[in-house]
Length: 456
Image (cartoon, rainbow, N blue to C red):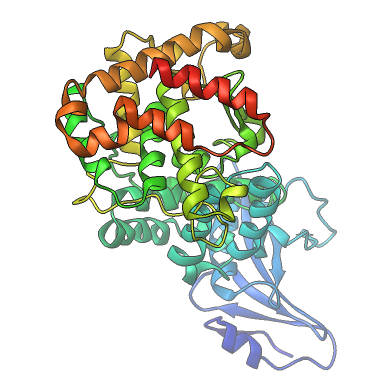
C-alpha cells in the first residue's frame, strides 16, 4: 500500500487498513517526522529526523517509540517531540541500544512509557509505604491525594504528565484555589515522590519530574501554641468536656507533647508504673522509631484517671486500649473538638509543649528528645537516649509538667470544676478507685499510685 498523511489520533489509527503484505507509513500532518508504521500484525509509533554534527547533516535516523496498543497517541506525540528535539541536537534518543542496519532502533522496553499513575501508586504504596511500616494516617493522606485529587489522572501514563508540565502546573493552581495552598503543595509532593519512585524501575521515563514545573505556594509554620498565661482558661474549657476519656487524652497530649496518632494506640501493657515510662510502639516513622516517654507525677495521675474512666464507660474496649472509644478499632479515633468548646487540641498542644519547655528552662535538645524528634548533627548520633531516660529526661519532663500546672495557681481551689477534676483530694479518690491492671501485680501498682498521689 502507498504511504498516507493524516492527523494521527487513536481513532484514525484504528481505522487504518491492514496491508495484505509488507507495511506502509501513516505520517502525521501536525508534527513533521512523526508517523505510524502499519504492518500486518502491529502498528508502531515512530519518529525520523536528521542527526547533525557541527551544524551539518550527518545521517537520517528512524527511532521506534512504542506499540499503538500500549501507548495513546497523545503520549506518543509528546515523546516524539522529545525524541526529535534530541535528534536535532545531534543526540540519539536511544544511544545505549544497538542501531540496526536501516538506521532504526529496535523497540525497547516500553513499560516506562506506559506505566500509569494508578500502577505507580500501587507499587509505591506496597514497596515504600506499607513495607516500611508507615502509619495508617500517613498512608491515608497519600491515598487521598492520589485517589481523590488526582482521580482523573489515575489511568494517565506518567510519561504523558512529564511531557506536559503545563498541565501539572495548572492542576496545582486549581488545587490552590479549591483546596488551599497547603493541600495543593502536599498533593504535588506526593506526585513528585511517586514519579521518582517509578523512575527507579522505569528508566525510559523522562528525567524531569512533572512536579518541578509548579510554583510552590509559600507555607508558613503554624503558630497556634499557648503560653503559660493562656493555660488557665484552656484548663477550664477542658474540665467542661463531658467525656472524661477525651478530657484526659487532651491533657496527656499537652503534658507529653506527643502526636495524637501515637497516643491513640497506647495499650495498658505499654505503661510501666515501676519504671514510670510510657512506650510508644508506632510513632511517626514506624516501629523502628519506637521510644519510651518518661512520666511525670501529673502524667501518671492522668493515666490512672484514664484507666478508671475507660473501664467504667468502655469495659470491653478498655481491656485493649488506654484511650478506648466507640470506633471500629475500639480506641479513640477522632480527636478533634469544636473550637467553640475546646480552643486548642492536637498539634496546638504539641506546640504548647515546646513553648512551655522553653519557659521551664528545658533545652531545645532535651525537648526534641522528649518529643522523639530527629536530632541533626553527627554528635547527636552518639547520644544514647535510654541512658538519659531514667534520670535526666524524667527530671526535664517533670519540670515541664510543673510549669503547666503552676499556671493554674489558686484556680484549683476557686474553680469547682477544676477542683473536682484535678484537686488534691480528687486525685486521691481517682487513685483509690482505679482497678488493678491484669498484667501488673496489684501491690506494684498500688505503690506507684499511692506514691505519686501523695506528691501530686
